[in-house]
Structures are given as C-alpha cells and as structure tokens.
Image 1 (cartoon, rainbow, N blue to C red):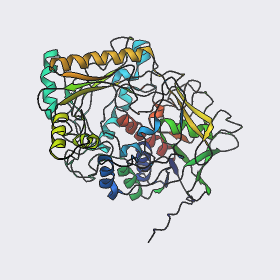
Image 2: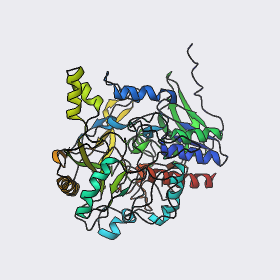
Image 3: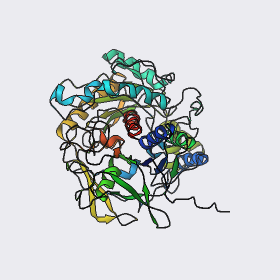
Image 4: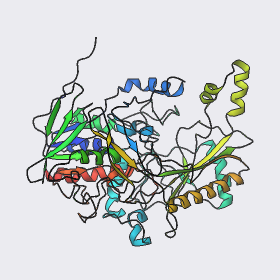
Length: 533
C-alpha cells in the first residue's frame, strides 16, 4: 500500500523559515526550535530513509547502472559551466534532508588565525570582519554539536580552549609507513579531527569500519545533518521536503522578506510567511535563488545592491602523488584520513596560498574495483587482485584558491530546470598563484614518496587538478554594504530579516575542509536570529 503524500501546505504561524536542510540550515533550525520558536524548514530534495543506507552502500560497491548513490534528478539539478575550467557541479552534491553531509568524508578543522587576516598580514585577498577569537567559542560549540573525535595534538592549529569531545581514531597502518619518511625529512605529522564517533554517544554508535564513508555511512556513526533535523523536530520544528523555493517576496519598501514561494511535487505553489528567513542552500543555489528573486526594487537580484551576489566563488583544489611500495600497505582498510600535516599551511609571503597535506588511507583500487574491471574469474581473478591490490600509497592536499571577482555563479537564461527557472552557471578558473601552490604541494609529496622508495605512478598537478566541491564565497561577509552581501551577524545588508548561513558567506576559504566553520557560523547566525525574535 502506497503511503499518503505528506502535507506540504504552509504553516500559518512561523517565527523562522529556513531554506535548505544541510548542516547550516539544520543547525539554525535546531537552535531556533530549542529556543522555543516556531520553525519551518523547506528543502528542495527528498527525505531519505535511514534504513536504505546499506542498500545505498551496495549500490556504491557493486557494478551497476551508474545511478548516483543518493539518487539525483537531471532536470532538477541541471547547470552550466562556462569558465576557463569546467566545474562538475553534480559530481558531489546531494539535494535532500541532510544535504552533502550525507556523503561527505567527515574531516573537521578550524581555520587558522591567518586565514581571517590575509589582507592585513600579506596584502592579498581580503580580511574577514571577524577574527579567529570572535569565532573561537562557536568553534568549540560546533565540535560538541558534531561529536568531533580528535587528539588535540596539532602543533600548527590555532589556540583552543579544551580537548576535542571524543578521543581520536588511531593512526592507520599506512600512516606508520609515512611517519618514518616524514621524520627523516623533518615533516611533522598529527591526527585528523573527524566528525564520526570513535566511541558511542547518545546520537549514534561508534564507527564500525565499513570504509565507505564517502559516499555513505551505513552505521550512522559519521555525523550528518539529519541529527540536527531530528533535534529540531523533537522541539516542534516542521520539515517540508521536495519543495524547491522558486523565489522570495518582499514588502513594498524592499526592507523585509515577506514569504518564500515554493513549488510542490504536484505543481502547486505556496507562500510560506515568517518573521525571520534563513537562506542556507549552499554556495551555488544560494546566489541562484537571490537572482531568481529579482524585482523592480532589486533588479539585479535580491540583496544584491552591492552587485556582489554570486561573485568571488571559491573552491579548494586537489594536489596528489601516488605510487606503489614493495610491501603491503593495507590500503582501503580505513575510509577516512587519520594523519595529516599542517606544517605548510600558513603562507610565508604572498607567493603561494595555504596547503593542507593529507596521507591517504584509501590509495589505489579496492578489490571490488579490480574485480569489476577484470575479464577473468576464479584463480586468475584472485591472482589479478593480488597483483593490483594492497601495495598502493598516496598523499593528497587541499590547496587554497584566493577569491577573485571573475569567478562567479550567475544564471544561464539559455537553460532551465524542471520548473522553468534559469539554471546556475558556474564560472571558474585558476590563477598562477594557485598553480604555483599546487606545484609546491606536489614537490613535498614526491619528496616523501621518494624517501619511502615508492614507485611513483601518478600525479595530480596544476594541469590535471579538480575541485574538492567546497563551494564558498558567493555572498561574502563584510561591514561595508558596497563591498559585501551580509554583515558580521550574517544578515543581508539590504533586508533586515534575511540571514544567509553556510559557506557562501566566507570571505576567504583557507585550505581546511569548511564544514566546521559552516557549523560555527550557523550557531552564530542562530544566536542573532533568536535575539531578534
């Protein structure tokens, strides 16, 4: 028997309407509901059944029709990319309750103090209107909210107030192989903070080592934003799924948002009114929705009097070197990183950007990958797996990309989505400083693998790099309304009841995975929203 469709009509009385059920939106919703406010969360994608996660893991592991692990909709998710480099937007995004935390790897680090002051310190990029000290208490709260496991042993990280909430995961076997070479080269290594349970908590059990963290954690030990959605609902919040917002409406004076207009699967449109609105749709869909909300008062897009909505799009780019050793490496036994080096993170001058060095626990093919590509069976297949699997090592790195005005998200009027709206066009390219930083990362990586006597078999460098899918910077934060979209409270300069939460408010991106900073800023935004109610 088919379950009846849920009620997708708007709520009559709402204090806070949150658009987007990823980590930023979920955290704001949970905090506002905890404070006793009426909250409605509007999400474009579906609500996935947690019981399906094992099946989704099997879809990932077994050869099949190539369907995305988290479904997807080609018409709904259509996009363009017209920049100097193609940006494969749909390669790593999930539209649905939980957002991209459903398939992320789960590494969570704080930005460094220098990240907030690049213009003041080095004369490059721009300063944030916040310092690390301003965000530090929110970082601590975010680590608690995400149940971060870590050893607090990183000599290069900024000052912290107390240890991580959960103990760190132990170093992997391949970490020990890297450690000796790094010691010989004078490269310091340390543990990696992870948003996954190293021991049971009230929210979930401990990690059991499926090894498929990206794209799916079947056990639920890795944090995803459905935890905060569940917390919000436990305090009375309402979540409406499969209802993409088409546009915002504002009052006659253009000072306040009055409603979020959304479409239901049956084609109806509804207006959700609220006292406060929080836009948390990610670095691409957030500016797109502001553009789609253009009016006579805001002809270039809502909250865009500065002309900077969509500008300064940033991502992290990947640098890597891999090869093989003449000994077992136990590759693929851990689905996430347990050791890194931030020794090369802070920039000595303006010649390069930040580098976060990674020692990969998932180098080379998995046995299932070898089997899928092999055209043999039985003993021959076993011999092929033994030859191809088990001796691979690799290093990776996230490399910072400084904000540039020409990198942007805009609308492509020549293509439309399933509701007839122009799709986002991602205009993305790399500059010479980014390429120089990638080359420096490759030099360090090659020196380590050479020290290990590894046969280097591949390099991802300036010409072959790709994005880490950390979309940042398209509604940047600042104090000057002519040079930014939101203020330090994450509220738009133009509309007094519209807050933007997520990585789109980043002024610079550093080289750290952004989710902990997203969570910290979401907690800050929630404080300000609830103060105004």
